[in-house]
Length: 211
Image (cartoon, rainbow, N blue to C red):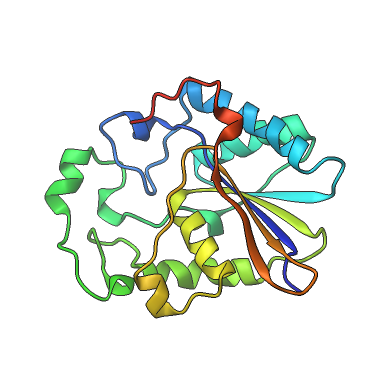
């Protein structure tokens, strides 16, 4: 049986978000602001899930792992680290400057599911082939899972939760701020509900230096 509640958290502000370097599989660390965001998110999570039983699963990329570790310290839960929650691979553009990545960028093509933006990168279809079996395998024991991961993973997770078709996925995307919280719940009648999306209220008093 599938997980009953899914809390999605994007990693905090990382070096590539404020510097001239690509994201994707580039393994950047959190900025000092990102560390503060992660701690504040841990506090918000402890208020959102008071006394509840939940697991934290995190991408193995450094920026997500650092975020999950700091959240885990606040809520008293040790994160489980998995490569299944990695951001979509940007292939040859990983570890490159944004200027270098632009030089190898491949023109957009339809369908978007099969577009490869950089040589060696995952397409959306191959990315989903990696991610969706992992999401489908999430257990309802404990009933709540907290995923600390990346923007494209979160977008795909919402698409999956809403049971979008491949055609709908091809025309839909969701935006997530660093350390935002998205709350997906299964109702008592079996409806899949988006309770909140990209919630950053808990970060209101933290200066955000992300462009």
